[in-house]
Length: 120
Image (cartoon, rainbow, N blue to C red; front, side, top):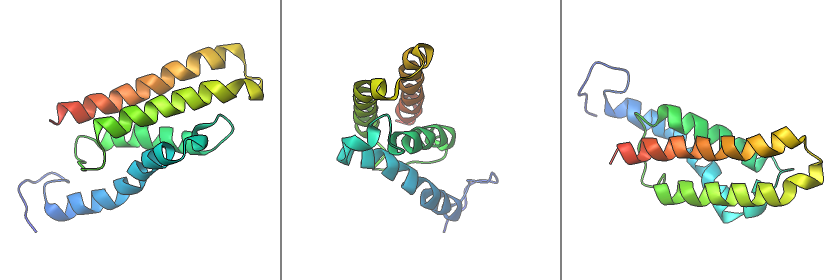
């Protein structure tokens, strides 16, 4: 194991541990891509995925993974937006929520994409 800095993520062990924390979050995105019905408005899958997106954005300065790619992020975003919009009316949402939520979803994914792109 190598150490290259004095900060909390300045060694191999820290980054390996971070990967054990982040990989299940990446798997939330993959699950949506593999099973788009998880992104329906009445499912918990899209909610968990959005939390994963936010946490990965926060940790993206330190976390890197071959499986967390811009392609995965954009595909997941597109599926969530499409499925959510296609099913939200069944829940009789407040009109403001229905209008605002897709904007927040898109912005959250855009932030994660910016982090990923800035790393390359």
